[in-house]
Amino acid sequence: MIIAAIIGIIILTILIVWVIDKFVPKKLKPVINLVLWALIIFLGYITFMSVYKEIQFNQLKVERYKVVIDRLVDIRDSQIAYKEVKGEYAGSFDKLIDFVENDSIPITQRRDSTVLDEERTKAFGGVETFKTITLIDTLNYWNVKDSIFKGDSRYKNMADVGVGKPGAKFTLKAGKLEEIPVFEASVDKAIVLDGQEKYLIEKEKQAVSIAGVKGESVKIGSMEEVNTSGNWGKDLSTKE
Image 1 (cartoon, rainbow, N blue to C red):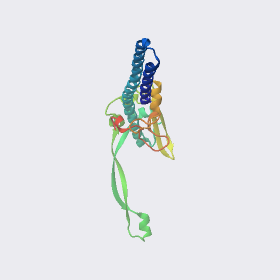
Image 2: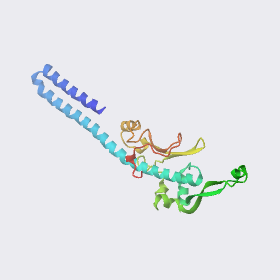
Image 3: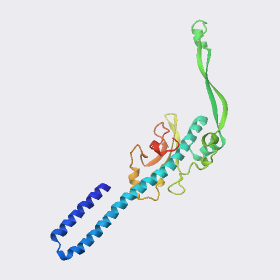
Image 4: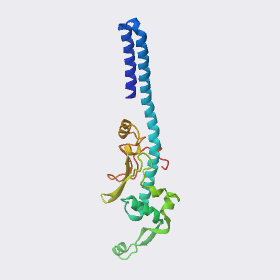
């Protein structure tokens, strides 16, 4: 789009110069030249600002995305711990924050043990047959907020987007997909990029590049597939 505009300006300028040279009387040429130079400067300024605004927008969106993504990673880590203890994902931030504040994660140890296989022993006419089973021992418990957040209290504001539209909250969903627990936390890009040019926001919402954030929202997890990943490139998160 920008390249096409620059090419158009160059062609228009050449055309204007040709028209002046061929058809404008010599007495009027100085005046026309002044107007032409003013037009060239004006068009050059518009072109420069269109490029500069996009550069500024790209810098700002990366800064805002990093804040949002780090918060989504906190939500994902908390949800995984919640599922480990509860067997499902939390469907609201109240439940998730209360879990982080008050619950603990068991520290377990897996070990193999050999025991008598009674059915096979009976089937073999009393000949003792053994089988190996895996035992899980609970050794201790870790407080969730200390284990995940290392004493930081940022989990209390887990629902807040933190940038863009003031007071904006993430959308949190949880449920089951063919009996398998799933969750999704998301926020619309328009909220994250609030205050920027609308055409730039709309262009960003159409992004499909694997290096950026794909789609119309910034999200982690999915209600349509078993997935706890985010929809962004690896360079956007400081925690992954």
